[in-house]
Length: 118
Image (tube, rainbow, N blue to C red):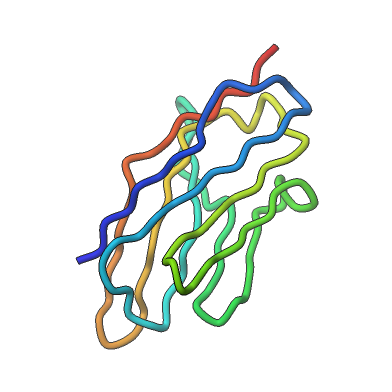
């Protein structure tokens, strides 16, 4: 089993930056993706950014050029650097791991609140 713990959510002014981190405990089977979803009030959960076990990254169009996802494979962590934050980035951000190989698993963190407001 894989357990995920997020940190870094906070209240920030528009134009500010935040860094979200997620630590995975337990062994993650490859191939896999790690990344972040978010869910704003009244909206569906959406994929924000992901990074594969091979290093391929994916971003939703609305965050391209502002957010950067990175991964430390040795430490089993994934980080989301968020710059130039906008009020529409306000949401609960969830870390996830998805395994695609011999073990197919979906694991989620508890979520961390990001609020962008003046």
